Image 1 (tube, helix red, strand yellow):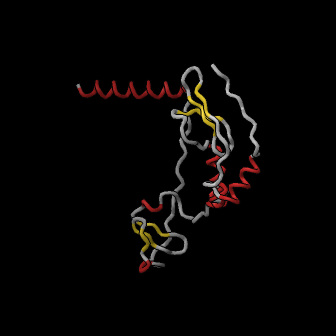
Image 2 (image 1 turned 90 degrees about the horizontal axis):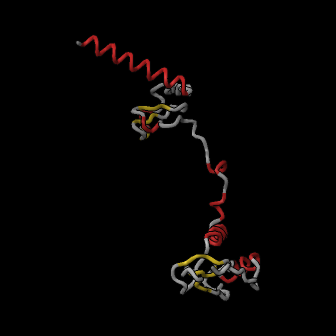
Image 3 (image 1 turned 30 degrees about the vertical axis):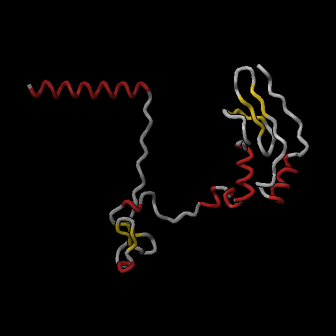
Amino acid sequence: MVKKKKILTYVSREEAIRLIKKNGFKNFKPDRHSYIDESGQGWLQCKFCCEYQKVDNVEGYITCGDCVVKADLIKFKQTVLPKSWNYKPTGRPPGWHFMKEFVDKDGNVFHKGKERPELKGTLEPTKVKPKRKKKKLTEDEKLFQTLKDHKKRLRAKRGRK
């Protein structure tokens, strides 16, 4: 099997990104090399970084996943924001829009997730009970629980006869 050789390119990644920003993606086309190894696997260099990638058809050109991500970061900078910047808490509990009727702390009334402005301030805020956390059972506790359930079923079965 032929080992992949990394061919040194004339353009560094930083230089390539600068050229992409200046001239656009369509105008950036460095020389690409392709080959098919002894096992019949085709290899083609990425259009931007010139790293070899596995391909089925060695005609044309490809863009590797890393370069796609870099291109998206250049085009859409606002998508890079951390989740903490995007999340804005509303003060409403999870699943409030599934409740038949929900009143938030400002007095806004929601009926099945739809706001009813004509009812604003007429009802008290909904009190939400926190979800009870279940204790995680150990293997022994699970075994005792199944044994207890089995005995209960046997007693009920004997009682029916």
